[in-house]
Image 1: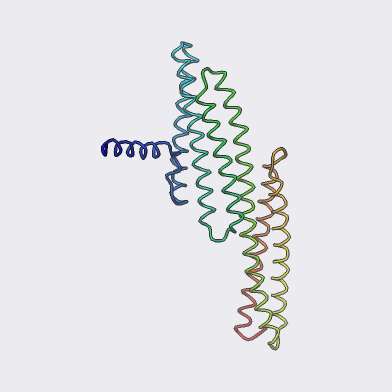
Image 2: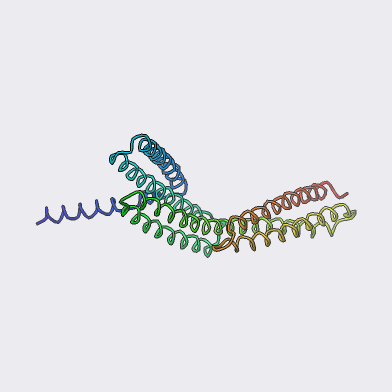
Length: 264
């Protein structure tokens, strides 16, 4: 009786291990990223095998070569799904491990990842059901549409993460500017310092405006629409905001040096 229970328990544990998604073995973002790199390489190999099978069929249109096209095509689609799954899990863990990201945004990212992982499982069933080259083509087209949805969700979440980080950096610069101004206002011959602080403040305000514009663009990364254009626009606004903050830090450093050295 004890042997039977032990064997049953062993089979149960083995089943749990075997039924886990491949990329789910990762426990850290760095491990998940490596899993994604590995899955990406396997996907490229599977695509190459499928291309070779299609070439072989074009040269010699036998039933065997036709079946090889179908089999390698299914392998390539499954490998692409593995790659997408690994990438999603990496992004989920990456956000979860980032102490700068607020819990609410982490939860949004996690929920979107879960939704897209469920889509991937549904697509696996579609791939398994492929019986001929027409089925293969139809499933491929369906996957293209799902990939667009996946990329849209992740792009929007990534944009929101970057906006939050940019806001945090602007907060830091603003706090530093305020403290320096408090010190400078009690100093004699402070005109040059105040001028530098005014320049820094103007750059921070411009950064805030560009960060807000970026956030507006990222919120429009949805389907239907032009998500890639909106994502690119958001990235451009953040690049400008980054330049504003770099310039602000330059002025703040100059003001700090002037304070330390005693004024103008």
